[in-house]
Image (cartoon, rainbow, N blue to C red; front, side):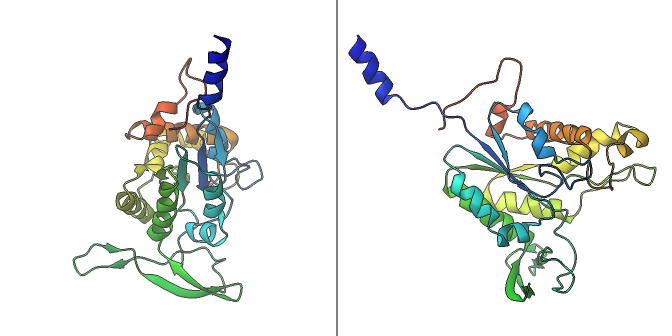
Length: 262
């Protein structure tokens, strides 16, 4: 009996917790952009039953995050069964101009003759004196997603959080072009699209202007820790509206614990 137990322990697969990796900008990053702000990614952990690694970095776009090798850093740690949440958009707009753009804007997509989006176009520029080929937002997300999928990870493409929709005193919010771009990338890679921006805006819509203004202590983009908690919960609500397998690991009473990687 003792020998059989030892044999079982030697051959049984280890119980290892899956991990959720986050890639994004200051609205997701630890410490937000400083000065009393917080990124929602640091408030996601208590809402899930598996570990969260927040690799979001303030001031980054899909382009600069790629150029700095940060997707590669995540890829070195990802193993089969993990999840990667990718959320960009706040720093991806603007005109490509090496004198002023801080190396962040993506190349605008083209348009095929039938009117559909062409995400295969690229732009030529330079960054810090070095020539750079800039791709579209969709291309950056698709390339990262395919890399993680090859490693056996499940990728969730999430739309950017909204700026304060009560900033003018009246509620104003509508999806921007990056929602369409994110949707195109999710479609092309057969990954899940989480409408995080929309679900967060829906929460703000139910609040008063004063309540929402209090969540933005610095500017109209970055929230307080309390706001980050609300935004993290909105991500969970948006996630639940999808068929993502990450839904299995949403924290519910009595659900905390490790799971075996598949």
